[in-house]
Image 1 (tube, rainbow, N blue to C red):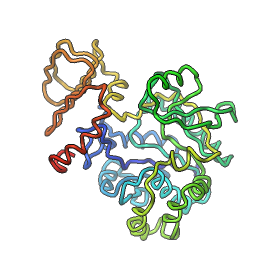
Image 2: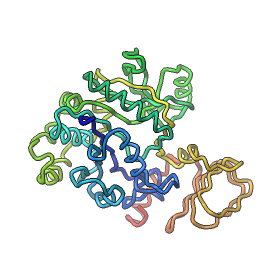
Image 3: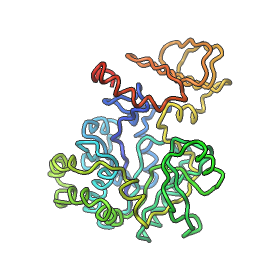
Image 4: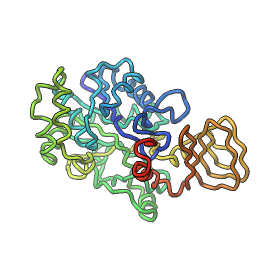
Length: 357
């Protein structure tokens, strides 16, 4: 237990959850599920079941440090890793791994996003502990694979290879987000899992992989290892981190290393990456499959629609829409075209500057 750590990635903007998620208050700090806790707080409370609070670290953008401390007041400053730039997940994970390895050369790590929903927390804890044992005993990188229950085109997929234990498979191949027909074929084959972006590994194993496959990132962030866990760390990171190549950990390591494994997990998972995923996972649907996050509404012939507002909402003859009302923005958008919402922020910035971003 003393060698196990959790790193929570909490630096994203959540642009697909616009207009609720904004640059100054992204979705990990919002009570998306209406349970009185932010997604970050919910994730932290879940991870405390795996390691003590002192072994949980948050990786975030520097502008969100104060927000992290507001939501997780029990953390020390040393447990909040502040990125000065957004360079994707490979530099982010490398930074956290180098820091923890400096503190404990035997560090065994779990990396999780801050904004996922996991309904079956007991199963999640069981699976993570199983993976931690596996990576403690083997030179291996393990990822949780979510057992798919629909042909979703919004997730990457993991192709399972041979079993190496009763439950853990060698990873055959990462597959990018498929079209619908391909996703259906994956589901029929019963040999593919959703890529949840939850990784488990020994720190030495991950650093060896980064050094081999992304030496530029390794060389930049390891150029002065003595600064980690000291008062000089932030100054070093501020100066050097922006120089790292921007690349995801999937492209950098997971698709290239030959010691990657996957553990199937039925944990009631959703990444809540979009309004549609929130609608799908919501247990507040009415008889017409509407999710209404509003105290008052009058709906006539409205179906399969998500509505979020603090005002009285009156709507008629709508099917498969997203309606999100914030103080300064009203979004009415077809749910089938929600992948375009992320791009809206670019158009808005061109027309109105940063006012609505």
